[in-house]
Amino acid sequence: MTQPRSSLSDRLSRAPAVSPSQADHARRLVADWQLLADLSFADLTLWVPLAGGAWWCVAQVRPLTAPTTQPEDLVGVELTGADAASFVQVHQGGEPVVEEPDGTGNAPRSREVLPVRHEGAVVAVLARDRRLSATRPPSQLELTYLDIAAELGAMVSAGTFPPRMLEDAEMSPRVGDGLVRLDGAGRAVYASPNALSAYRRMGLTGDVVGADLAELTRRAATDRVTGEVVAAHISAAVSGRFPDPLDVEGEAATLLVRALPLQAPGGEHGALVLVRDVTDVRRRDRALMTKDATIREIHHRVKNNLQTVAALLRLQARRVSEPAAREALLESVRRVASIAVVHDTLAGSREDVVDVDDVLDQVLPMLGDVASVGPAARITRVGRFGELPAASATPLVMAVTELLHNAVEHAFPEGVPGRVELTARRDGHDLLVTIADDGSGLPPGFDVRASKGLGLQIVRTLVTSELHGRLEITAPDTGPGTVAVLTLPGAGRARR
Image 1: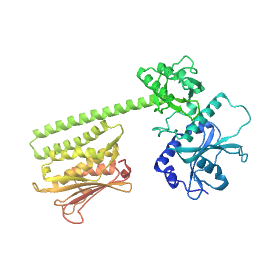
Image 2: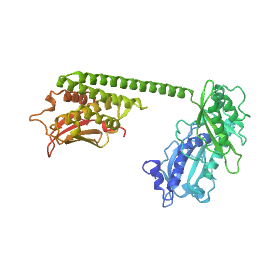
Image 3: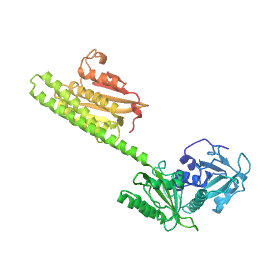
Image 4: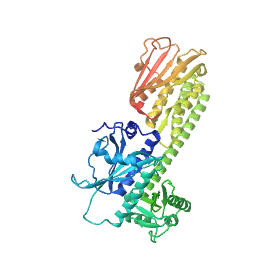
């Protein structure tokens, strides 16, 4: 029987005997079990008991180091009766079980069933299916892999692996990237060919096998502080702790080093060190950081230049005696200042996105500085705009400030108090922005498409050409005032 697909968390929650902490442990195991599959040359499946005696497969992983024995998808499959006998035996007895080899199908395979223990309780069972091969004796690399896999499997059974969720499992070194096995004194007893090549690229000239790997890594690092830290992490793993992966940079290469303790009950203690050459990755990262810093510096300089332009326009406005000309210059000050705020936000961001709410919080107080009756009209904001790409945020902020300025300037007779409300809400994938006032309302026969006002012409151009949206200005359903609605298709999917 096969159940519908769902997330691992949902599948684990269906098992009545699995508590939240046990489910977290199972998720940590699944997040890091590619390592165990590759070392075992085996397919892994995780099974949990259901009410009624059935066993349900909740996760599956295939090895990168060997052909799969399970080409079919087992997630969601339920087993009962004789098919699940070994699962019941392991769950109740708490000890691993090796089934009789299965010679059916295209290739014979063996299955070992391990208990997955957490805080003393067996919460699930792990089936390890390995293809049987009698054509040649295993190599030293394969024997080392299998030995380490046996130790990690014993740690899974004891509940000591894995300790916590990896922050970046995708970047973590794989078995094939490079592997070094350490004994209880921290000396390398085996190093895979890829690990040896990685250390050679670091600038190492001596032997790895037989050497104290922590000391060897410290000496190979070009940065003394980083070398000391990575060496301390390797020593910590030998002592039984689980340090975080770290970069260490040598003469011609940068390695990502992950050290894991091997503390199987009754086994020889030591550590497993995985290394991955991330030289090109880190070089690209540095190039992106440099590019990002350059872009942010450009935004900062644009902001400074715009502020200078706004200051010059303000000075010019003070020298102009014609009221209409002075008003036009002050409106230009407001528009330039709004754009400057957006660039100021981008200069402090590491992404090409703008938190529109933060920008509006800085722009809205400016309206009172350039509006003749601004203090009489109170502006309130409802809802959140969220984050938008800079290409959308700049025209949106300009359009909103133009509409707010129009409401503050023209909706209320001089000295008469009023209220303007700015609302942002999402309708499916669309962002709806509403500017509503309780002022004197629209003049008779008003048509936003035929309006000659510069402010509304700017808004129409920004909304239709830049934002690919639409603008509607109407009277409210009840009461006096005006309602302007901006509809921006697709902006509702922006990050919050």
